[in-house]
Figure 1 (cartoon, rainbow, N blue to C red):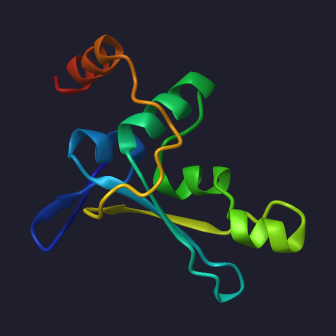
Figure 2 (cartoon, rainbow, N blue to C red):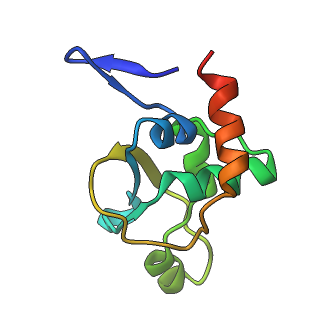
Length: 111
């Protein structure tokens, strides 16, 4: 469920970020790395929906790992923090969902 701060509604899940037109910023917190990637929420929504993964930011952050830290450690380093952002997308790894599927999802959640 979205969170209200300063009188504004902020998303707390990937699907909420997509519906509110936010991007999803992933920040690595391992050993002061602070590597940042910004994803389009619609592609993330599809990726998580297909795999039936929970989309809440606090649970979804366990699914992300930092490439620079992982290359250095030679194993996956999963110390990510997800947050909504208005920054421009920097990582287009996930394709956009089928428009029909997205519209069907939105129709179910709008009431």
